[in-house]
Length: 136
Image (cartoon, rainbow, N blue to C red; front, top):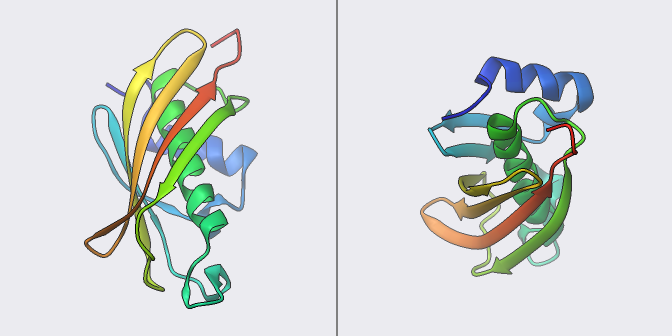
């Protein structure tokens, strides 16, 4: 069960990362999951007409960060300690939806699995670990 609400999560993001809403938006929150949408923008497309890998990595990382905050509480200084991503298919130049689930929340680490979808296609899978500050 999340420790903070969606409204509290959005307030934290607005305070520490005020431009986050230009990159993504929260679509849904579950007991141990979150769904985030990255709306299509032309500047995310690389040569070849597909969404750039760094944009997908950024979405995976942001989604894991949001899920970490939901479950660890208001710890905006949590930091990525590992991000492993597998690109599975070329995403169409369209919105990308990230579906993340909490794998483990410990005293010092939060581990999340994220699937990135372009339409109905699974285009990437990531596992992201966040290091939590000692006061978390």
